[in-house]
Length: 193
Image 1 (cartoon, one colour):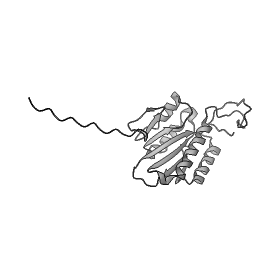
Image 2: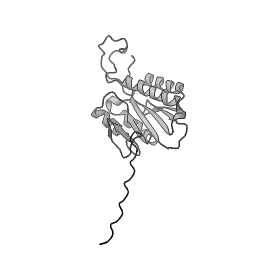
Image 3: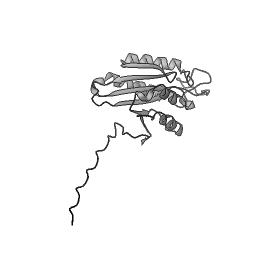
Image 4: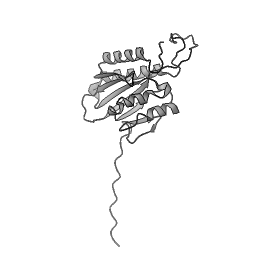
């Protein structure tokens, strides 16, 4: 109902940070990539050493919403035409569930709330603020996969970060759903004739 554009997602980012704290997230970092928010949740143990990130975009589009839906935009000239409000809600739900069940998993989960996805700048701004030092792997949350989304997520795969998008892997590491395969054993050498 209250969409915001690009980096001007102050209300949204503030509410995201507030909810993450209410969920009991271990660490909430505001202002990464200017107005992005990062929530860090640690599992019961860190025996795996894995750090996994999920990303959702927060910004809206400068479009007048012409619907009569009860949840339509209340801000003239702005709407969530790409579903970013749903992305934020879904990732908040995931973060809340991960925080509520920390005893059931090992490693670290990072919820990344990105500004300025619509101009292809927000992901890079988060990377420039140190995002890749926080996660080993990352996956974007979305209702549809586009070339623009792939480009944005690829900018996060620098250093050690891997991105899975639409079932395709854009990095050197497997995801949790697809463990690294065991190497094939070398066959014994053939005896000399």
